[in-house]
Length: 289
Image 1 (tube, one colour):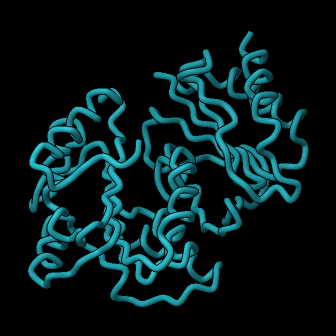
Image 2: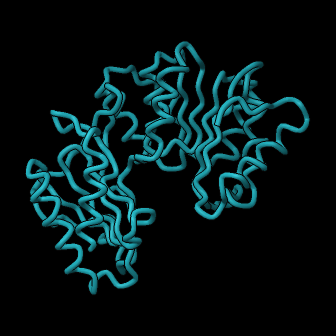
């Protein structure tokens, strides 16, 4: 039964594969496709199996079946990485190589190269579910000044650079993540200006930009579900409006704010209601969903 689910999902994605095997996509989303403990991603020629079972060891036979299924259907991939969410050690959660010797270190999407570091932490360094947003960025941000908050490995900002943005500033707490963004710049031949890669806490960084009266034509707000430092708390479920209000002074007249909801337990309707309340003063309006 489980293998039939994988086959059905693979068939539905048949048109998304590229001839050179450079792209990235989610092959199977078990949460919505009938196998809640499994998700399967493809990054160029590396298969990534996400095991969400409570006891990963007990699920080893199932993982083996999934691995064998994809090896029979996609014989060209060169490595398989397993990421068991509930493994006891962070090293294991970051990924165990099941087969192959070298993981893919870059992917190509919409003609743009992105560096990936598949074992950088529990996820795989590149969020596949913002593919359509990156497409929107490519089509809309030419010549714009862009601020990429909570940049992580910078994929949204890299897309903005590929669009021909006048400037892209990346903010993230982790320098290692921003170094991945710099590698993406190098892959695409984009110039690297160190001042556009700022490491630090969101709250003081944005405050400093506000005091300097910096302005951007587009602010990308893609926060984690929850994060806390001694400078402040990010809680996408309970204080998203505070995040929006924090960056509002940085948005130029007629500029855009791109707001992303990463909170699994916040419905689309609830999130839209939050945005509508923010628009009640007349200074913001929802342009597109």
